[in-house]
Image (cartoon, rainbow, N blue to C red; front, side):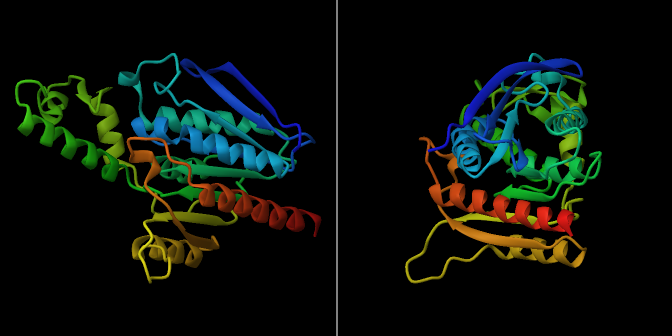
Length: 283
């Protein structure tokens, strides 16, 4: 096994400090992979899978980075001040730090809503990412927000005395609402509602991973929605592959679950994209 190296420290971003974790391979890296985390509790559930994927990439000579966006995780900022625009600014800043020279390929790996943020950020980076990889992508913020509002509505019906006021009412009054345990501002809700990353990313290629529950006797295949998205991106000049991976929704289960097939497939996809990018530079 190679002597990969883990580095974790607080770094300064605009308006906050955040923990940045980097996984370094034993030799100078062939590429950098920047993980864009999922949203809310999904981010916490995904940390172990991100670590496993980063370690697998390091074994293949690729460095990785994960950090907490403004107001999330170990960020020094308050979640109530978080906005999509601040998150995108953080991603741009971090991408610029990984390899300012642009000498080696850059890959964005978006997890759930992080896929939408990665797509949006790709259009504003100083250099075009060589690939975008997405885990179970949520490409419209309103999907994530609607799911959280539905859960809050059910909670109010089941426990009207304990669930609190309707977030939409509080936002209309200019107040912060508690949603899924987070102090959620009306500004963040509005920006999530408007977040639409269904258009193709500014990347040389993309890979979309669709987590599917296996069904006896049926071949594993991605959902029609993800397959259509891959086709649309390919038609817009970004060759996009979609892969179905058997496994549970590990970002939304009671116990941590390792989906090793996704870890290996992600590492393989990044290595392939990096190899293609290197050949393009050499030619």
